[in-house]
Amino acid sequence: MLIVCLDLEGVLVPEVWVEFARRSGIDSLTRTTRDEPDYDKLMRFRLQTLTEHGMKIGDIQRVIQDMSPLPGASSFLDELRATYQVVILSDTFYEFARPLMERLALPTLFCHSLVVAGNGAVTGYKLRMPDQKRAAVEAFKSLAFDVVAAGDSYNDTAMLGAADAGFFIHPPPAIAAQFPQFPVAKDYAALRAAIDGVAARLALREPAQRGG
Image (cartoon, rainbow, N blue to C red; front, top):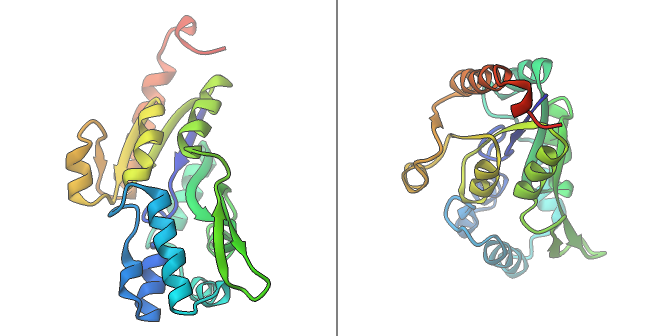
C-alpha cells in the first residue's frame, strides 16, 4: 500500500507569508524556507517582524481567506486521492490552514500550532514535533507502507530522503542543484507520472522484499 506525502505551500497553495508580505507591504516577510534552511531562525524573524509592525493573527487570516490553491492543484489532488492515500506534511500552522484545506477538499494535514495572545498578537509557535516530516514518513514505513514524497524546499529534503522515492516540484533552481538526488517534476502531470511509475515498480517486487 502506497502513501503519498506532499508539502503544502509552494506545492499545492501559494506561500502564505509571501502573499501576506505583498498585501501588507512588509517586504522582509517574503523570506521563506526556500531562502532560510533554519526553520527556527526564520520563524523567530517572522514573529519579531509581526510585533514590530503591530500585525496580529487576524491580519494574516484575512489574507488567507482570499487565497486559492495553485492552478491545477485541486484536480491533481482529487485524482491522486482517488488512487492513493495522501497526507499533507507541512510546516504551516493549523491557525492558517483551514480555509486552504477546505478549498482542497480537506485532505489530512499534519502541521504545527501558533501561540496567540488574547489580543491576537502572535507570540510564538509550537512544533508538533521536531523534524515532523521525516518522522512521519519513517512512521508510515514502520507500518509497512511504501511512501513517495514531494516538496519544493530545504525543509522537505529530509522527508524526500526518508521516503522510498522523493521528488521536487516547483523548486528554486539553486535548491534543485544542491540536492540533485531528487528528480524535479516540472508540473503536476509529471509528478503524477513519477508517482505512478514508482508505484508500478514497487508492485513488481517479490513478496519477500515487501514489508510486513
